[in-house]
Length: 188
Image 1 (cartoon, rainbow, N blue to C red):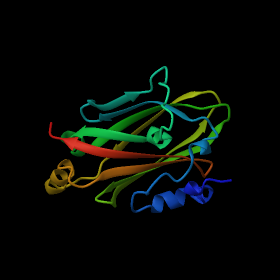
Image 2: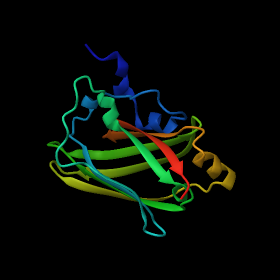
Image 3: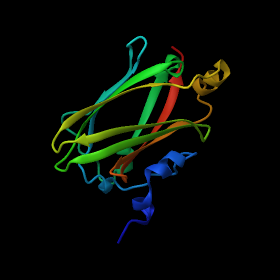
Image 4: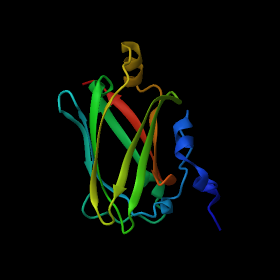
């Protein structure tokens, strides 16, 4: 019997992701949707103008054993803590290292939607045409952040309202992964 929690996820398209105006309430697909063995290994964010690393995470070589009853959805949620200077960046560069399983990955698309106070504030779409089976890949992107007025930056850094994002991953137009993130900020 299919899990009602994810009912209809197979019909969710790239176009649907690009129309998403508010954060999703939960995850739109089960972990088992990732039939391609896509496994994120490392992620780095840097300020492109200064080359300063703002965030870096790497998957440990050995995974800890998960306790009985562990909510596996927590594995696809990340909590970022960024300095104010990140919100004020003009251009960021990111590097995502990921492995691919035994099947080739064609037309790998990531749609990332960022929300503040429950409303869309920015969106990006990235594409990799092909990843060979069994390969390790480095997906690098550089993009401009939208300019924000000081009062908006102050409000974001105050952490009084939620800052969050949805990242939707598609292979050949089919949703295979959905991750979420929350953001808190501090003065630097």
